[in-house]
Length: 280
Image (cartoon, rainbow, N blue to C red):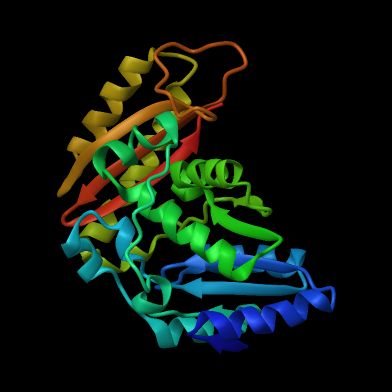
C-alpha cells in the first residue's frame, strides 16, 4: 500500500495508473475507521483496479471548534486497517497541503442544505462540498463511495457532482450497524459504557417509526419518537424528520409513490449521533 502526503506525487502516480488503463475507486474519510468505512473499501476493491482512500479531518465542515478538537484521530491503526482491507493508496494530507490559500467558494444546493443537518449546522455542507470537490479533482476517480448513514451528505455530494459537472459515479453504500443496531460511527468511541448501552435506543426509535408509518399520522409518529428519546438517560433529541428521499422536503402527509426516509440527530451526553431509515 502506497501512502502519499502531498498532492503532486499522488497525481503523478495516479496518472501513470490511468495511462495503463486502470480504473480508480475513491473512499474519502476523516479517519478513526470502523467497519462501515471498511465496507466502502470492500465495495471499491470489488469494482475497481485501484482503490484510493483519503484521511483528512476537514476543519471547514466543523461549525463547532470543540467538536473538531475532540474528533478521534487513530492514524496508525487506520493505516493497518486499510492495508488489510485491500486498499492500494492512502492520501493523508496536511491542512496546508489541502488549503494552501483561503477558500471562499459558496455553493447553492437549494433546499438540500437548508433542512436537518444544514439547519442545525450552518456552513457544514459547504465545507463538505469544498473538500470533496478538491479531493475529486486531486484523485480523478471513476467511482466514489459514500455511506448512507450520512444520507443528507450523500444528496449534497450528488448535487455537487451535477452542479460542477464532475465526471465521477457516486456509489451509495448501505449503513453498517453493530449487533444491537447502533449505526457505526467514528464518534461512538467517545461514548461512555453507560451511554453505549443506551445508544441503540436511536435504532429502536427508527424501527418504531417504520412500523407505524402506514398506520398513524406523521405528527403522531414524530411525537412518539420524541417521547422515546426523552425516556433514554442523557439523550436529547435535536431533530427527527420524515422527508422525501429526493428533495429532503419534510413530509406532512403521505403521497402515492413517494419514498420517505426518517432522519434523526441526537446528543448522547456531549456526543452527537445521526441515523436514518427508509420507511417504505
